[in-house]
Length: 418
Image (cartoon, rainbow, N blue to C red):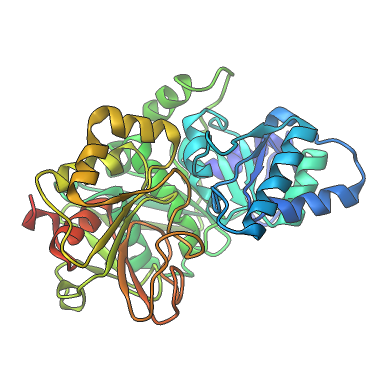
């Protein structure tokens, strides 16, 4: 019997599919950002089609280098802007910008059951909505924008059941880091990771988006959260179209994994892999002093992330010698942070607030680390040089742990601060 991914792709094709099949699948939505789209535009122009297949199904979202910090970034932005204007696509200009994997769900651009392609490896994030979302290269994005379909391989599915009630300081980031510790960076290469179980059903959509975001860190093609009433309500509040929740009965999986979350501690990914994970009580991380803490990115820049950061920082200050950067995922979230008083809390604590976007995640615009500096970050990758100098080190953690660590100056369990 089909899995969720197979059910979505079967409906899209109009015929049953099986893992391993490579077929021409219609694409419901396609997008790119300021670092991948300019290359796709060049390829698109060489196809000679003249126009995109559907302007309302394509989004141009500059988020990595916005506002542009040098001439090259400015050129990339101008290329994106000109393409969006010429073809009438959805566009997020400077002044209305946000991180692509935050604004796409937030603005209802993707709905459950959609087939989505994006020129970004973390396109799997949109799988939290019960969609089949995969990252593609710029050439594939160009083709999808031109013709509205792509050759896609039907993936095998790895089912992950999260069980048990999580503790006060255990967050969705800890769930996915625990999974990575279990299966490793190559545990689901090319697979659809299907997330379910009682723990996932208790998560709000913000938490589910964090979960799906890091499916690629296990090699997954996509990370689909089993859709339910939470999915339906979230979509109904944002999407003005009919949609279908794909919840097939008795699916056949390539492999099944169980993650017991009942006594799960906050998790820390040690350099230099997101899968190199230990609990926060492990002596390898308990005395690590930090130079910088980062809260943001497509993994953890949403409402629940900013809210818990404010709760940790209330009546506290960032430790002397430590830099804290907070980056809301969208302008809607930035305004909410102001309205809720979270921004005042961040600034009073000594944080630097960034404009919405990708922020310090990839070490090319803000928050770049110097030689041998150490950061704790809510982002999704800690490869060598990811956030700056190759000798710097990045530890991945939840927003609560990152905020608490900013207060003490060392990797810290949130209960030590609250």
